[in-house]
Length: 55
Image (cartoon, rainbow, N blue to C red; front, side):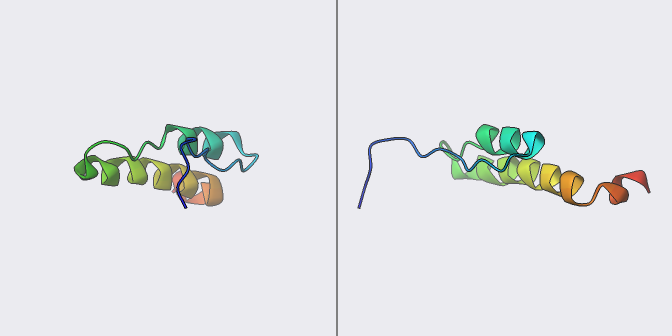
């Protein structure tokens, strides 16, 4: 099943996570995906484990 409507990122209710997911664009060269996914991963780490930032 295919859809012509663009898929919307999930909404978590956490502003930083939602903004990171909105910014995650996996179109374009696959070689650039790792950098984009890493940026979202960094935001998730900061939100879910803020104590690790203070070390």
